[in-house]
Image (cartoon, rainbow, N blue to C red; front, side):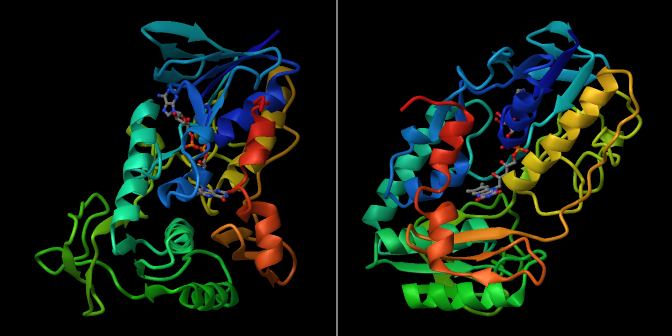
Length: 361
Ligand SMILES: Cc1cc2nc3c(=O)[nH]c(=O)nc-3n(C[C@H](O)[C@H](O)[C@H](O)COP(=O)(O)OP(=O)(O)OC[C@H]3O[C@@H](n4cnc5c(N)ncnc54)[C@H](O)[C@@H]3O)c2cc1C
């Protein structure tokens, strides 16, 4: 049986490992002891759910393959280095994902720190009268709404360049803007935080409780608690510089192979595939990579290739009951609260990923 080593057991790596598990010897190398379902972390930050339930065990995810809890230190055509040992492989896939400012995602393998960060954030939110969320993409929008929903008395301000940037319809933005305003969130668009010299502040900038900042729209904003909801960065430190594009993502061909290699694949947030970096797209990539890997290992030319998603889909819950979704259908219809609640908002996909990980109740 041919061996496939997958580095990174996030949304992409888990999907790929599950596709290949039945017919190949799969080793999933994952630094964390548990799968972190970060998508649902925003509700924990708002204090409306616990963080611990978001950490799902890897013990049942594969029926034949192995999950190895360690950080890979090198990847090449032909194998992976883990804890100083070379692990040969017939195919390797790298799915090391992206990092995000704390407390939105865990740092490296530190899940205890992630839980502490979620608890500390929830505690700070519960004590404060005013909260600022910097970054108006889907993460910032959802976070602002979760906080305001859990704490209707708080002043919540959402600031950013544009609500929900990316290939989405203005109708989605308008709908979300109206719903956020109705919920009581102050939305400031065209508003980037300026540093002391008047330039847009770096994503890594940190803000102190009570800090007052000036934005590029000339408005001054203050908050007792600040969250940074932008600045995702691809985790590609295992890959040589020449395989990366200007934004640090790894360049892949239409078969999701790292350019210039034959048996080395990449899937998920680390790739330069021109489409929004989402778990949904990471999983679509994993399905195609699995077919290509199966062909490669059977000695066939690949019979399929990856096409970036044509119809952008985005579900943006505004707390457990409200929200809006752009559907991946012709004309990109926008639907509202009932649909968004059913497909994501009610538990932020926790049940779905418990099923994926085969986590027992
Ligand atoms: C708050 C939030 C909400 C979101 N909501 C949605 C949503 O509703 N729908 C949606 O489709 N997308 C959503 N996304 C985006 C989605 O989470 C990402 O697109 C997704 O995580 C990408 O999956 P990935 O497997 O590529 O990377 P990741 O999920 O980042 O996983 C990478 C994995 O690799 C591991 N790893 C890294 N380096 C090593 C190493 N050297 N050795 C071993 N393991 C390593 C990490 O520990 C991690 O487990 C959301 C993101 C955030 C932050």
